[in-house]
Image (cartoon, rainbow, N blue to C red):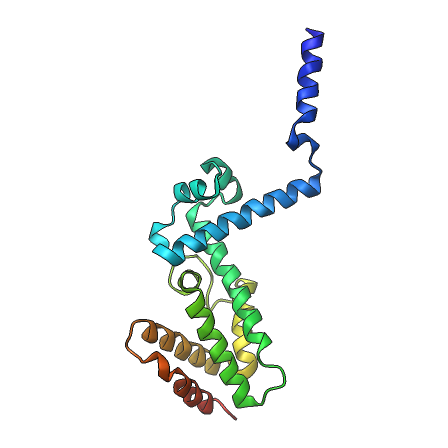
Length: 201
């Protein structure tokens, strides 16, 4: 009996999970989390959010559904919300990066291009950000930091909040209408030039 206990203890100590340091365990957890999000974005970009299910994601990344729910207890809704909030961070970084050293109108145009390019390149992320029910507190005091930072990235070149909302609404509308074929994509530059001129001064 004692020998059996010793062998079980030795087997446990030799297992990969036991040997992992806390730092490595955290790294592995974060890698799993990022893999889940990447798989969700890839499937949504290809087939839309309706095609994204926890079963598909578990199969795509080789994890069981319980493992997936261990990272995202809220399932698909939480995954979609996380993708959206990460999208706001990426959009913020892109908009902030294009304004340095530019005059007012050029800065506005650069932000407009950056915003629309992001929407073009990441349609599923953009949809999660603005069209899916992600329970984000838009237009509320004390809302998510990611939302505030993204709005501020537009406001820094526009000014007051109401004008920034009008600018944001115009960009959102342009993007939707172009993707729907209601506006000619090749005339985007003219639209941005006209829009930028209206917010100078």
